[in-house]
Length: 184
Image (cartoon, one colour):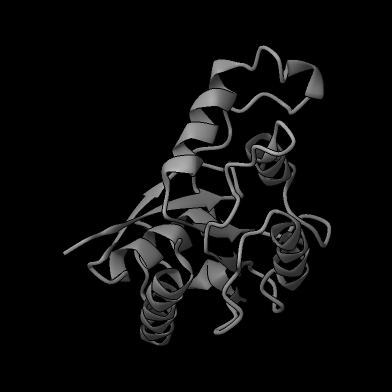
């Protein structure tokens, strides 16, 4: 079986992040033809165009990892109705230098999770705006805004809500089909 390499980008840097738990839960229920791995973003120096001629090694490694992936899955919280700064920085680092975006053409999906009721709706849609410009065809359905996410996991970080597990399974099956139909 040919497995598709999926880079998972978690927008939260917190060690005990709800979104990191969501990412792991999605990875656990993913179809066997997807190989998912989290690509860390917290080590990336802030993007500054002055660094394009002599980029930091962290930028180069990140760009190479994204370029090598078949697809990308974003799992992120919402900060002030938008994406967290670390995630925006990762998007910028991966999209530069201009004309050499590592994101270009990668099928993607967005999952947002929050303790609040609207589940990161603002972040989800702000991220999708950037993905349009980056030429990342983002899966439109099913949408994934996970509200009340702080109550979905046990003390060890394992998903304990069967309804959410079933939704995650369906989401990942849809994402696998999306990747297959949008991968170049």
